[in-house]
Image (cartoon, rainbow, N blue to C red; front, top):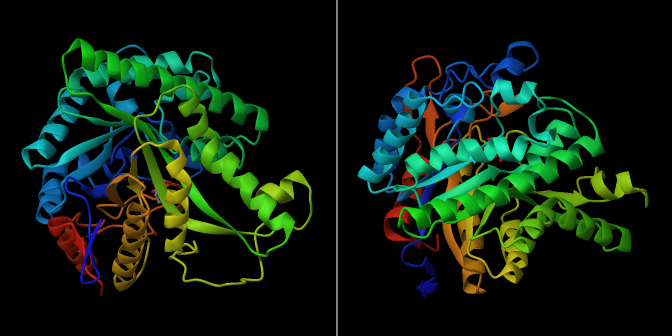
Length: 413
Ligand code: GCO
């Protein structure tokens, strides 16, 4: 990290870009469990989303015009394997064209293989709770990697496993809306097994085909856990939540030597203030008095750039490269989006200066998109979506970010 007149120069070869996920941008994902769930229990239906499935070349032209050199996308399992064991050549051909469209524009693809959604046949036959889940996921990933592997170096097997299992099996807000620690544990165990099997498969396929060494990880969502007070209970609860919600999945994969880098998704902090020493209080109570207030995004998440620096320092112990696989703000007015990006990039540059090997920053998201159970309301995009006409409009903040992507320099302003 070179500092010239207060400016911060990021390392050569740093990956700059944005991230998306199939179900949130493509449209028409009718074979997935989320699509079925939305028809009866969701607040909104993903419907046509951004029609990215058809318009991906237009979107990648925009990414190129914004000087992105990397782009994270996800492959939709429900499209690739609409019935168990039967793979769609059209879908596999589509994703090969998508990846080649990025490469043709000088943009490095970062491919996610599972981003919260599952094929309906899988979800209806035990889903991730079933002991067959790791094998089923491996079979799907093998089919994808054999087609895309020669064009893709960076792989994210599972996006935010901890968020998936907590929202779907503990808090009950995502399909299948379960509320069971035992079911959550079973799914977590199967996802660890699935990742390890896919990690080994990707490396083996690349060796067999004489391809460049791949880099395989997960995208781990981490929240900055900040004790509200200086008391022992606040500090212990913050430490405990960090170990469980932020690090436990990463630790499990590091123990199995199944991470080439750490994909980090960061958005916000949690002000930890347990009301008692009970386990539920220690694991979930937050400050209600709004002590130490900070700005919030349009869905009420605290904006806390320091948290990214604090978490990156905590990741140093793993001695692995770190890619910021998601970081973004949903905001009504665009000025706060650039301030968010600038301040979080300052945290990244501070962490690099402190010896953390950060290799890339992918803003969430390239486009406004379907924000899961919150629908289309929250707008994260560098590019504004008109969901009626499907027109795209580049936001001013994305032009400021584009200058950083082009030069690799974050000015002091
Ligand atoms: C996640 C997902 C994205 C979200 C984004 C904003 O982190 O939940 O990867 O699908 O849209 O994070 O919430």
